[in-house]
Image (cartoon, rainbow, N blue to C red; front, side, top):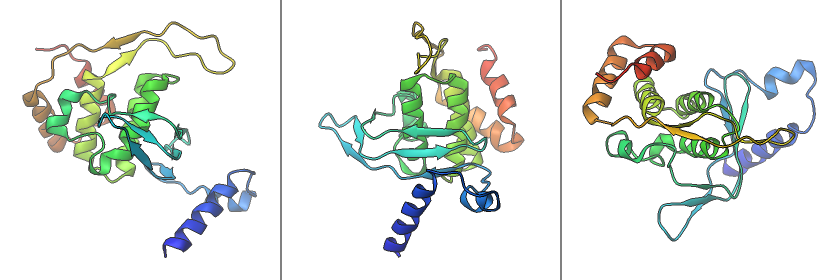
Length: 204
């Protein structure tokens, strides 16, 4: 079964190099409500015990068809998720969070897309990985309110590089706040826009 799966994966990858016929588009690129992954996390832990280096590429296609890539050789450490959240939300490489955390780390390091788009990707990737709606929305809130953000995009090929400026939220994180938000999410099932409005609200 593993051999068959591997061969199918190779066939899928090979199809990416040309435009499929119109009648075959649905079969090659099915519509997924939370997007889909290509590849898996293969990494080597470094001697410092905090960083790991990706040995192969991980791709994620979000629900809008945007492809996010964590290239081989990327070094990740979960730093895009504030460490203070780890104690009550779980570590970034634990269980179902892992793929989404790796992609989020790389996106936050590259800064070639707006941070809000990166956080939305993280939410969708978590859902794609099987994280529950309540947990994924709670993590989304925590990142939106307490994550480190940037004003300008880093220069990409064909563009003029701009000065990098990271703007931390600098808001204290409390377990009580996160748990209250989690209960609100569980009971009200808010949209992401409603979660963003709550996260943008001034501290009481």
